[in-house]
Image (cartoon, rainbow, N blue to C red):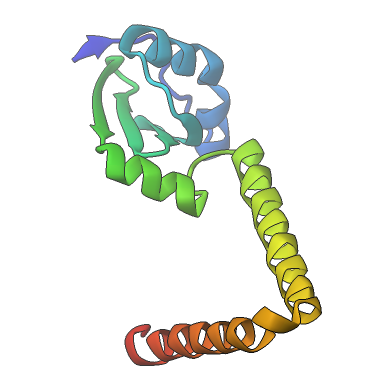
Length: 150
């Protein structure tokens, strides 16, 4: 528990409680003091406490601040390498730039696949085996989806 200056809310309700907290000061204090690295996801205030949530790929941090004393509890959760790769693959808690990169790579892979199919029609020697391979691959993917995806 560490003290943090968070002014006590006035008796004016939740809107006044939110206004009375210097959010930027609280966020910067948590980042510099504890090395929090995720993006700010949520900052809630009420008359008794503030809740601050940060998230990143394979990472989460939650701070609960008592407004009367300035004391807070900070919980950081750092998952392993597999969780980071999983979040990057899904684009979860990774930001706008990573989402654009995922979309651009999907468009690029679609274009490469389509040009491969177009080229397959122009090579007579490989046409039958290539189309048969594409058909078997499609049937396997549809079967896996149909049988094992809830």
